[in-house]
Image 1 (cartoon, rainbow, N blue to C red):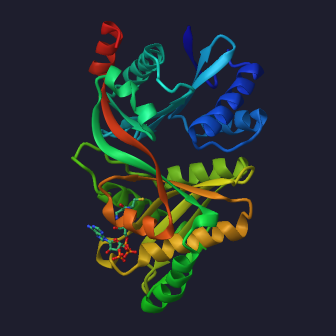
Image 2 (image 1 turned 45 degrees about the horizontal axis):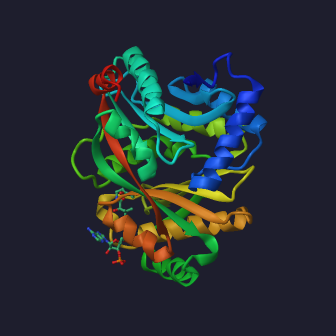
Length: 342
Ligand SMILES: CC(C)(COP(=O)(O)OP(=O)(O)OC[C@H]1O[C@@H](n2cnc3c(N)ncnc32)[C@H](O)[C@@H]1OP(=O)(O)O)[C@@H](O)C(=O)NCCC(=O)NCCS
């Protein structure tokens, strides 16, 4: 029988943590899922610290006998505000995700949504495999979300070098800066810009919930990373008036930087089409290669409708490796799945 157990539940024994490590290793090898290869003690340290840091992170494992067969994470956005929402991401050690697993997760999400008083959850999947539960939950697709991978050795280094040479020359009014910690004087502006650019990402319909990231959240996660051998690398572009005109960032686990996650890149409206995103992404790629010689792969997710960023990424050498999606699943439909057996 599959049971969902929160990572900070006293029922989590060290043998469960070891089983979680085996699961993540297996998912990486079998399905190309993205998890650093670190010891179970470090996984335990990082995850428990994350749960202590962010009260609206909820992480669970799906336990079946002595095995851990699934990893589930849900997080809050704008909690306490009228537009608060929750997202769900998960992975599981199945080619065909069984009904029992989907329903066990549905039951846990019903509890979570009820506790927050939220009426729907946004489910994010990175593969067709992990999109399967959505049918059982009677969910609606908002966007196709493609996963792309860039193998460093196969990157178009000629293109990257040309961008780093030509684009700064053409944009003499811009200054590129690198940060590991967001400087205090840019923090509020960066949080506002990050939220704005998230909402400007092209989408298929208008179903996505907005996420207003705050300066406090940025600092909270920086503090968690500082304690847990992790980094976020930020490159920011500033104009002559010191306004931020664009940024790109990536998440790195220092204990295993083999694969690095390239997260959001954004350029503000009036400055698009000048090659600034290419400059930002090329600089980030180069810096990660210099600072983490063991890095071999960059991973990123992009909505299928986001043509500008796909074009830039294709030029660098990113290749499509998975087709997932962003889905909306209502509390009502989760309850219905539980009562009709999915
Ligand atoms: C995506 C984004 C970062 C691009 O920034 P940018 O600085 O304008 O990008 P660049 O000028 O470096 O290059 C954009 C490329 O996309 C192309 N492009 C622009 N609009 C396009 C469209 N609607 N369809 C197809 N290609 C398009 C440009 O022609 C250019 O390619 P080219 O040099 O081969 O002609 C910017 O549009 C943005 O901030 N969008 C909102 C946030 C977002 O979606 N971020 C990406 C998600 S991670």
